[in-house]
Each structure stands twice: as C-alpha cells, then as structure tokens.
Amino acid sequence: MSEDKYTAVVAKDLEDLIPGFFKNRHKELEALRAALATGDWEQMRHLGHRMKGVGTSYGFEPISAIGKTIEDGAKQQDATAMDGQLAEYADYLEKVKVVYE
Image 1 (cartoon, rainbow, N blue to C red):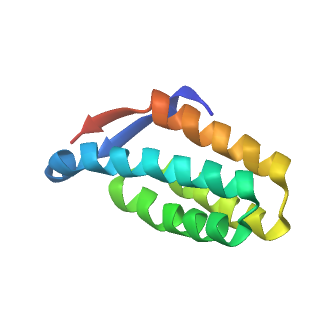
Image 2 (image 1 turned 90 degrees about the vertical axis):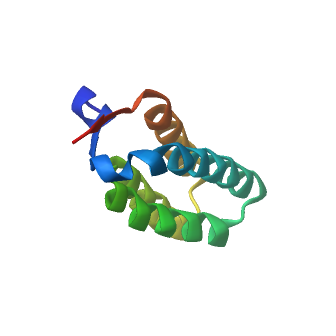
C-alpha cells in the first residue's frame, strides 16, 4: 500500500463515531483470524462482505477493498492468500491516519 492509502479523509460529523468504528474493526480482525484458524470460510466470506460495505461508508476505501478480496478469497479457500490479506488489514489498521474535513 502506498502512503496515501494510509490517509483517510473522513467527514467531520463522523468524528465521534471513529473510535468505536476502529474498535469494531479490531474485533473484526480477531474474528477473521479465528475463522481462518478454524477454516470457517463462510464466516470469513461474511466478514469480508461486511467490511466491503462499511469501509467506504466511513471514508476508509482500503478496508472495503481488503474486504472484497477476503470475501472473494474465502470462496477459494486459500489459507495462504487469506493470511496475507489479514496481515495487510492489520497493517492498515495500525498505520492509518484520519483527517477530518
């Protein structure tokens, strides 16, 4: 991911919601890791689908893109690819900078 993908421009009126949003994303990441560990591909597909919808709604397009890849990849049941996507998601959550406008 390039550096600009680590900057999210979020509407100022959503500022109060962002801490909860990120708390939920971290829980989601843990749920994805647990699903991968147990081979629960349906749960991974479901979580990826939810990520795909919620990311862009809040101004975090990379979350939606990663979610789509997870949703599609879960259908292929490729644990190696999914592990890479979860690493990318964790990296994004750690590095993203939020700019309110």
